[in-house]
Image (cartoon, helix red, strand yellow):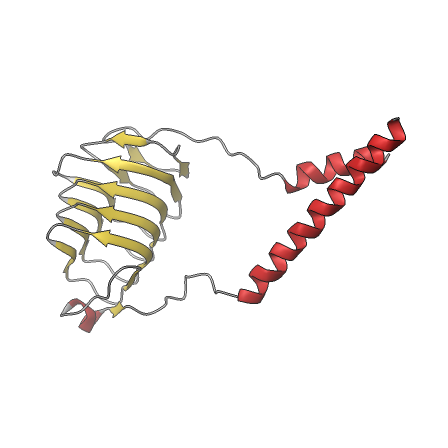
Length: 205
């Protein structure tokens, strides 16, 4: 009976391993996606063409040849895109006629332009590291967007019509005490598992 307890606890604590897929060059995605954490050469990038979906790159690298766009979101609402490393494109990530997007935890590296906004509003960009060749963001007729980089502050005309460098309402709050208590709870559970294993070992002798 005691042995069954720690087996059950093990499966409760063990994170669920979700199946991942590999992105295809130039493919249009219309449903939730989770990509495998690998390096992909996608010169034509990918397109997100559905509302209210989540695309999780799983920290994969999407790599181009300094042409085209890494990820294009066009005519969409409430899309979430996270954990992408977008490298070597003309434009890393583009939103056109889109609103309510949640774009976070990205690395935009060695693109000519990191983010391009066109006629898009009320999108949230945060936890983004940008090392662009020419410019981190270009905007046409786009207002009321919220953007915050981890490695730089934005200035200029874009920030007159959009919110820059401020914590967005989409970001998870930081609670140091919660982190402490979570770590303490994990230690307690680990010790409990060790004791159950030890007790079961003695009972089997």
